[in-house]
Image (cartoon, rainbow, N blue to C red; front, side, top):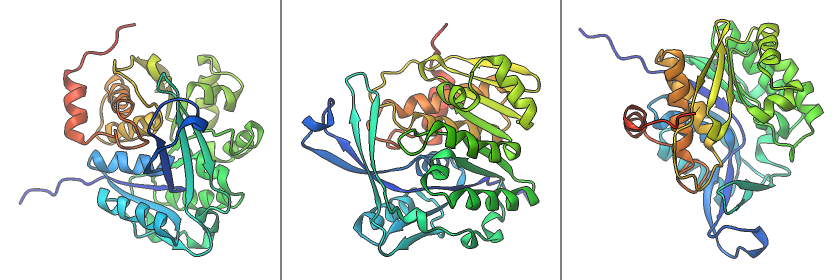
Length: 321
C-alpha cells in the first residue's frame, strides 16, 4: 500500500478587508470608479499558500454585513479553512481604498477603526487550532491593529512551541497604523520565538536601525533566527542561514501593481521551505511568486497556482546583475 502524500498545513491570523481598487491610475481624488476586491496581508498569504497546494487555516473576524459575507465566501471559494473566520455584530468589515501611481506603486488608505478583528480575545485561541499544523505565519499588521493582539500572538506562539511548530514572521510595518518605536518595542517580544524572518529591506532598517549585513548577522545570532530573509523588490532577495549569505536576482516582469508582492514572496518561500528546496532555489522560487503578483492589478488576484509558478520558475530567465 502506497504511503499517503504529505499535506502541509499552514495557520495564519489577521484582519480581512474589502479592497477598493481604482479603475485608473493617479491621485485618489481624481478616481471616480473602483472595483471591489478582497485583501489583507495575512489573507493574501493564506490565498497564496492555498493556490500553491498547501492546506491553510485562517483565523479572522469580519463584520456581520454583506462585505463580511463577500470575504467569507471568497475565502471558502479559494479552499481555505474558514472554521475560525467568525462574523461579528456591531463592527463593520474593514475597508481600504488603493491609489495606484503611474509606475505601478500603490498607496493604501485604511478605514478600519472599530475593526471586527479587535474583538478577538486570547481565550478564543484553542490548542486544537494547532493540530496538524507545520508552520504558523504571523505579521506585524495584525500586531499593530489592537493592543490586545500581542497577547493573542503570544498565546499562539506558546501553543506552537509546545508542539515544535515553526514560526514565520513578516514585520510588514505599516506606519499609518503605528509608530516605528511601538513596532520595535512589540517585535522584540516576538523575535526570540521566530524561526523564519521575512522582512523588506526598509523594514530591516526601521526594526534594527540598520540593514547592513553585519547588523543583520548579529540580529540572527541574538534571536537565534534560522532563516533571516530580506526582500528588496526589483533588486531581488537575500538570506542568511547556516552562517552564510545567499543572493538571488529578481524576475523580470512588467509590474503594474506592486501591492501584495511581499505576501506572494512569503507564500512562495514557505512552499519552497516545506519542500526542501536548496537555498538559492528557495529564494528564487519566492522571487518568482512575488514577481507574478505584480503583473495583475489587485492584492491577491495575481497569486499563481502551483503549475503556473513552476512553469515560470523552471523556464524564465532571471535578470542578471
